[in-house]
Length: 174
Image (cartoon, rainbow, N blue to C red; front, side, top):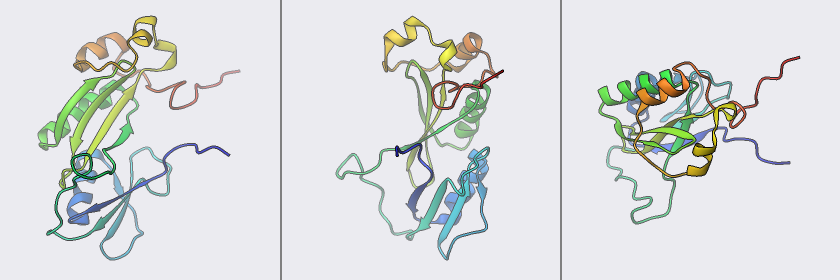
């Protein structure tokens, strides 16, 4: 029985309320009516998961994560958006909230990188649908370049559904 996908992530944060407000206001996550004192569970927009993220308060005196610098640990979580229009809108929202720290064109994946109030990094990605992959993109492999969202919109269309045939099944028609 293979693992199918990541169901949820749990983050230790200084203040779960502050972090929940960020994920709600910036990424549109919904707070769920479950949890315990100091814990908040949230669901991503468009998700059917019981919850996608759990936030657990550990106090304002907690130091920053040293994962990848001095300790092992998780680098980031990546969430997928449906369209390049979604990616473009989130780029603006993240920038307006001083959360956007970078972007990259990984060939088959177009990515934004941002940090939450505790400095925990996450990625927002749009994946080229299988039917739109060409030989040049395949040949580039995972090479990283500068992301030009407007050029990608011109190439693929603002409302083209990403990830079809890659991260989600292609629609079967009869």
